[in-house]
Image 1 (spheres, rainbow, N blue to C red):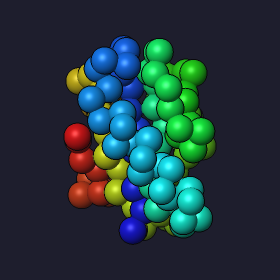
Image 2: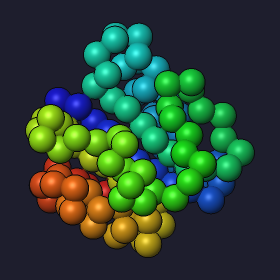
Image 3: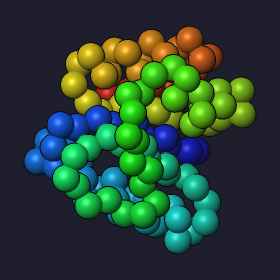
Image 4: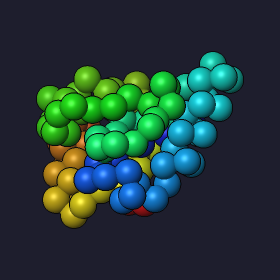
Length: 106
């Protein structure tokens, strides 16, 4: 099982699960299994080096660089962000071939 977390936050204060995401990414990296990856867009937060910081919007083209639905059949996609982010990323993941039951909101 693999988890690919996508999140967008206006500030560090809005990123309630910051410590959890940092620790999951760190443990996954230490184990070398890549069972958890995270791509986030947030201002002013200190993130573990294994968390990728996005500098752009999460467009379909951007997501295509991070997912491969045919290869990632055992992957879950937790999404966390404002409503517009959640709906746009959800729709883009579906268009890219991800199944609805593998996407959830946290």
